[in-house]
Image (cartoon, rainbow, N blue to C red; front, side, top):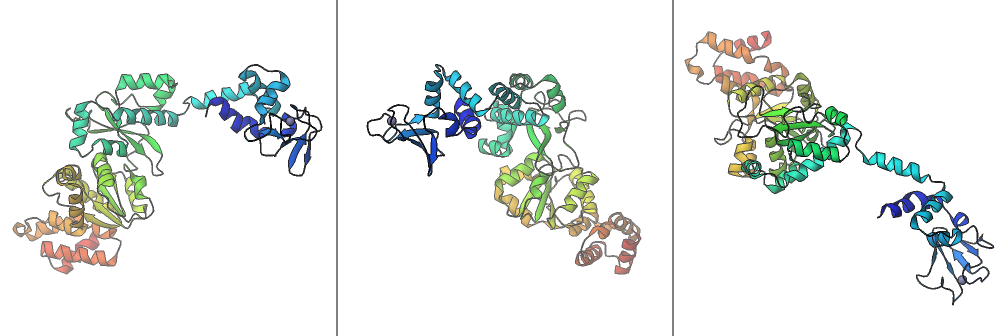
Length: 425
Ligand SMILES: [Zn+2]
């Protein structure tokens, strides 16, 4: 719809009626359901008629030009004739005047509402421009993503953003963003579009975009000042990446992974019913983040962190804090994480390793008491004491019993000793 047509249909015409527009016709009055009047063309009395929801009138007289199918006298034409107006703009202005619509003020409002004037507006623009750019990103980035399981289709589905700093800045300025607004949005202060070209939208627990996570260009070395993932202003460690998906109705299992691309890949490709993957974007979770996971309605949490030392430490620390039934994926069939397993083995292999996930307690004792036969009793007691506090966060009596059983099996200590250690924790 053209701007004029939209203005007429949505703003001006709803405020008009036949009495206003055809008000100059002789003997205009309501008779039954229709307005009737003397026809302005043929002059036949009471032959001109218009139903209330029409924006035109017709004539009953057979030879009149307003008689018959498709022959009408529109509000638009009548107003032009009535006031002897020549241009479309004159007619529009007159109809607006009759409707009591201030055209100038209206167009000012329009202009203002089209211009970005909040950080959320900038985010919307940034997302749409960045996702468009992602459809034709340079080969090295496309190749990297493709190796990670993100073909063209997945890039689109995941909402991946590709960003080149200068080009994006120019485009946002062209779209009407001010310097102040761009500074507030914080998109250009973290190396985004410079050494972090691949960027992902970050949402809060309600699914509202609050910032962005950048992925360090994969061929650059990770360092303290250039971590693998960098968050823009507005993101928080307190809400895991994609956590809003874990709150969707019907989700009973939250899968926790390290990398945001891994979480996206699981959600997009693995089709696991009732499960939602979220990412730590690293290997730590704040207390607030832990509280979010604990307060989510899903009864089961499955930890699928990287199969390396940092991942194991993070797994143990999450097990200490999560007050739900916790399962651990301890084997990615020789791969480091879901993001390596899925592209290599296919999406169904993640379903397989997930099905083979073991209870957290089993995992804990297995990893803590590996090669326990060589340990003395004192060393075994020390190790048990390290993990004894987990017993407290296990939500069910059955789970607590399982803890004691697993502790016995792994440590070969007497049950009474184990119970005493657990109670002292
Ligand atoms: Zn007529």
